[in-house]
Length: 171
Image (cartoon, rainbow, N blue to C red; front, side, top):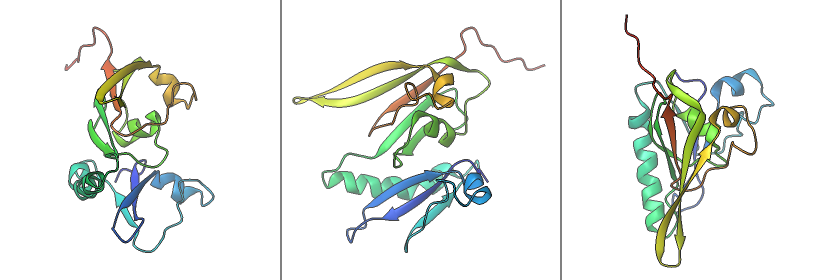
């Protein structure tokens, strides 16, 4: 099991809309006063992932989030791509940061370029959809630097670049 990335999926109303909370199971078990030790409510669902089941366990969460967005809410997802162990789409958990998203994706691969990643944010301007990209000092974000470890928003995409001129040595 991945003890660093787990989710609590909470129904928030009679329409069965959900909120998602990300936490570290290891921190919750080792320190009962940790912010990761989330107070559970009736009907909460806890998702603990093995390395091969992420997509399968997240599928019903995505489906519910899609249904919610059809009712006028923003689709609460984020994406990570590039040099991470499990690139893909993840639920936008409450107060999720760049560091949290990298943790959800299993961490940075050995080939990941910690000096620079790219955050692309989508937004609406008038009637047009726009995208804005900004560089992120990934090493600083992973160390909780508040200037780099930004709070993520709906449909943000983080691209973790490969170290320039990186080559795998399989000897």
